Image 1 (cartoon, helix red, strand yellow):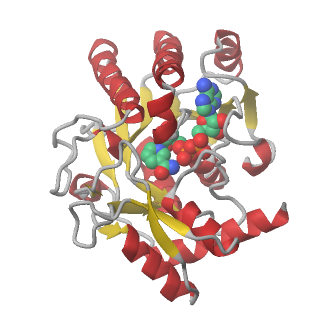
Image 2: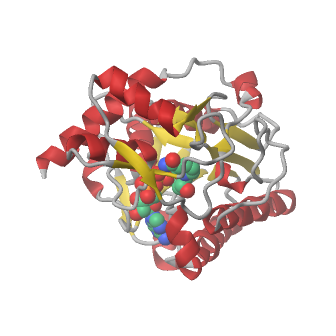
Image 3: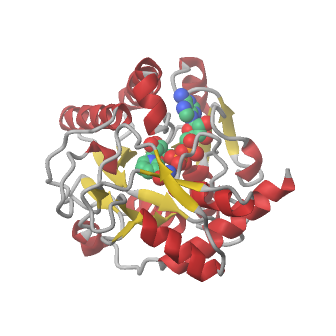
Length: 321
Ligand SMILES: NC(=O)c1ccc[n+]([C@@H]2O[C@H](COP(=O)([O-])OP(=O)(O)OC[C@H]3O[C@@H](n4cnc5c(N)ncnc54)[C@H](O)[C@@H]3O)[C@@H](O)[C@H]2O)c1
């Protein structure tokens, strides 16, 4: 098995690569470093600097490494930016992904894992299943859904083994507290809370009149270490016939509940106030993960550990500068 990880220098990618190294998987990374740096990549990783659309680099990867599996993480990831700059998201997430996938499919590659998102679903008050209605509320979600459909169409024609993993909200960091989410583009709830705590700034809640019990948005949070193990599980289990999986823990926490957990666990006070609602945010996104759990039997990290580790990493990383 030779695994090519796109976007392997990013938040999820760098923690995944550490796991692949530990598991003795032969892997290589392609990343244009548009939202990352090489500093979290394990030493001696086969690394190709450049865009996934760069055919010259793809040819080089093919001749030097000839991957049998692709884990496609590279993408532009900011929901709000995607609403403002649709063209950028269409080019990077759709056109470039297609170009990249076509190149390797045309060379006979069969195994593809695609990092999709909960943002592909139509908002539903109920818990979301893989079969729930899809209708992205934001442009980022639309670009991901486009590639999902493209892969499913390519699967039939080319007898591909496709796994579409719809990540819910990813939190936490590596066990060593040395690798985590440093993305400047991240408007992630956990990073925003950590920022408020570390710099004693008021935390703004993006809307408190949603149709939820406490008026704040509810999300399903999965630890990045669990997510990496799940991706590793799928590259090792080619015989699962389902193509699409929700990757979440099947439990929702509201923004206020998360703030309260941070306060209680870290024994601090968070000063918060109402901020402006963001376009594309939906009241609730919580998944039914029973399809995943039918195959993947490991227990998930509890949110207390994720909160402690996320904050420790954020503090350590931001104090260094
Ligand atoms: N973090 C989350 O909560 C979350 C939730 C749902 C889905 N996802 C998906 O998971 C994947 C990884 O997310 P992340 O949080 O690690 O993001 P990230 O921004 O940290 O990582 C993405 C990486 O891709 C690289 N990249 C972007 N465009 C590229 C291109 N054209 N060519 C080469 N490299 C390119 C960036 O430099 C970065 O290193 C993304 O596809 C994202 O949509 C993430």
